[in-house]
Image (cartoon, rainbow, N blue to C red; front, side, top):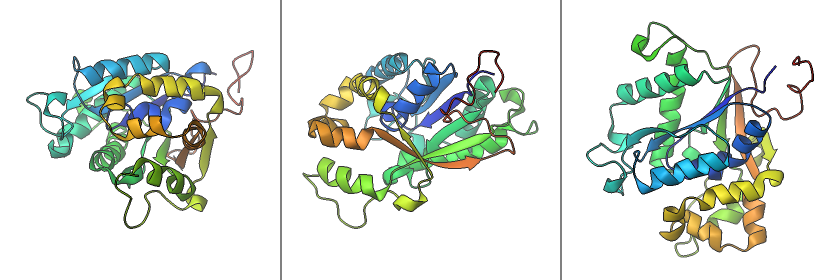
Length: 264
């Protein structure tokens, strides 16, 4: 039996590498199909091209870009609405179509907080949850293809033990006020150590040259001492939500899907 397939839904180019680069690479190495839906930026833009380079490194399918604007950057999708301003029903239908075409066993997107509260991340969570449900019913979005029922959902999250290290470091120019983003450590039920894929993950992140150079979070991550950066990005954290009695788990790297005769 082939390794289960994984579809990730992210808000921006570079999120695929930062939050799920290790599991995407590891799943592909095990023979699982992998792909990423990215909600902002359009084909032909600089960051769209950087996303393509990142996904090629991670051995994932070419980008699935929804093509909405990243609000602070009108050049991200000329003439298109910002992602959070787009009609919800339209966006859900587009994600449903990608789900039905790719037919993933497992989907990953952000937790309800969007990991750290970014509005585009929060909206991507809402859209994905609605699209997973709708994709299973032939009565909904019939023009988007035959129904598909995803068996397992993972929500990208971050424990307080990690944000307590990362957040002050990347926000040193503007120290964070109020509670740290993330969730209590004891609520994180899945931690994937991607140390063996860390160099590849970092290479995929560096493919996003525009973001590395603009002084944003990736620039600050790049400026961290190597050991602190490694401490933060060597793990990928999730909340695991089975959607069927027999979930096909793309993040199960125990060898359960490996055998010479193709049987689990």
